[in-house]
Length: 83
Image 1 (spheres, rainbow, N blue to C red):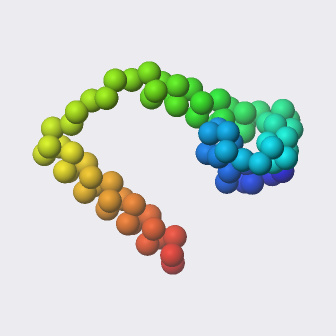
Image 2 (cartoon, rainbow, N blue to C red):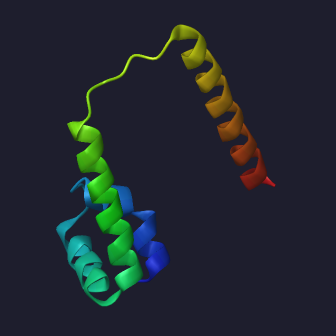
């Protein structure tokens, strides 16, 4: 397995949602690739931190502004990929 292949299924791996055969290839790659191990460890730590946090209610005006900014960013990235 190459780093690009590992990163393509990273979310499914961290969530425990990939085929056990692929998991074995994944683990073998991680055992031999320090950069990928760092990425996976950072994602796991981020998930743990997020799960430990209390929800925070955003002010309606800020939420509207944030939603618009995120949608614009997503649209811009999607448009760039389609070119």
